[in-house]
Length: 425
Ligand code: LLP
Image (cartoon, rainbow, N blue to C red; front, side, top):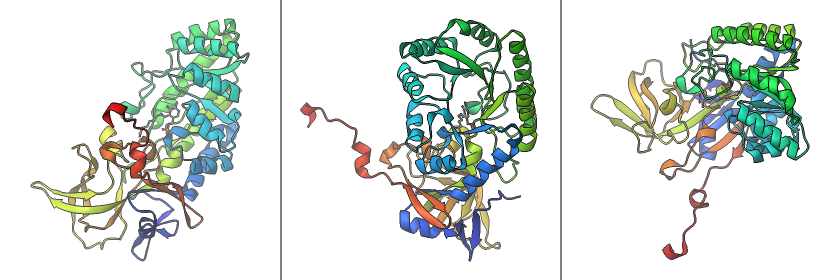
């Protein structure tokens, strides 16, 4: 089974994005290049909203997955809320005209300054992750005569069975609070005049492909809500986080949203709570392509290397998480052409600089274009300037038209913030 994507199609042997040939995009905007399909973003958002529709949730797009303003605006127009993890992310979303009461502020390390900014803007809910954070938020709120609406993030101690770097709900992870710590904090919240308890938050990890961890988390949260309500702590909201896994590999199956939606909606309804969700990857991941051009093919002693102009500086996921991203050649290769196992690598001086290892591909020629799929989430936002590589341009294809949504960085951008001490001039 191939990774089905409505927006990607070969037309006269050329891969296109919603009808626009990638070869034209490469010509106009250069490579490496991030390309996003607006139709795919809308479809993904709508699919999630529909799956959970019975609970009328606030679907708060997780901005960290890709914070490009054009993407935020598409989701704003869909009626999305936003999950933010810094006050700067909040400002990015505010700049698009979304009001702060559609934003959820998460993160283990909020500074006092960020709290102040978010309180003044009027964010809908702070996900509080520790007693120390609660104490600081209480002080900050009191100092500006505000009351912070809070959801306590619990760590349900469920193994999300995903990569160890992106699991968040196990007891050894830094996220959330144990049920014991949450109980204690919740019973002392009434003594904190700057805080108003609104609800619970649970996000157990990212790229979760199985129902099971969600089922386990639903069980833990259900019991805990019951206990809190019985102890006289009425709740209003339930934030079940994001983490819905997508199919990166041809043989993978994306998470069956319908089942998870059914049990999560049932949980919210059972306790009469407003449901909040924070999906990131499942909205933007499959809607993005990383377009890169082949520089050389080098025949190593054990196998060929396809050396491309894109690198770990734009796509850190393979190096960081051993992540698999499907690669298609932009010019359709004939089904009769021989396929061999190659490493697709970038020009960066690191052995970890690869986009794919031991991947079966038709050997391309220098100048050919490759499309790295599912590159919408956690790629451009995690990019760096290592090896003095300017960050690439980003393009949005909407209704058959390509729009530049981020300029390629220039050589000057690379040293813009450096300061030369006078004695070294
Ligand atoms: N809510 C919270 C509290 C989160 O920590 C995250 C992601 C999300 C929502 C969104 O999760 P999503 O629906 O996107 O799975 N860089 C890694 C992923 C890091 C995820 C961080 N938290 C990667 O490339 O796989």
